[in-house]
Image 1: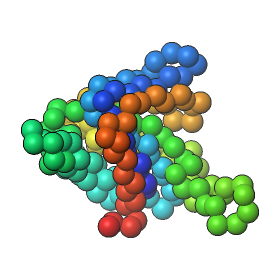
Image 2 (image 1 turned 180 degrees about the vertical axis):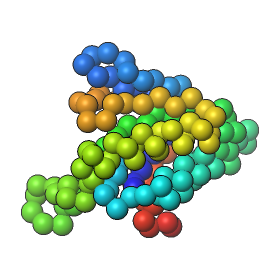
Image 3 (image 1 turned 60 degrees about the horizontal axis):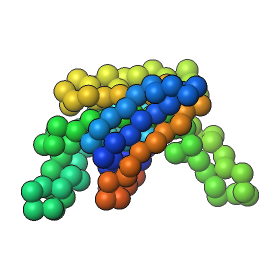
Length: 150
């Protein structure tokens, strides 16, 4: 499971021109799921997202977590995070999980994030054509892969 997170001062996702989810200060979390992902990947990533100290403290240093600043999450499914560009110019998405595997894992990720963080969690809609808008604060953008826990 891969996530690309962006610290945002505000963000929203629209589907068919209508706002489906929006947040104020917090994290936009783009989630890519591969067929080998498990509950362990979800649990590890959720713990990491909640504890990651990437918000500025009163001294302007990145010392605070999303919980410390009472932030919000906007979670968006994004299978293209598993794109392989090794050969040719057209990305391959063979590592991305098919929807029958990905949807339950995506929904479980959201459920666990809500439960463990006790923060507002807004979402997009799996498989929908979404328009995501955000103001990247910093900018701060971080990529995390549960299979490569660096």
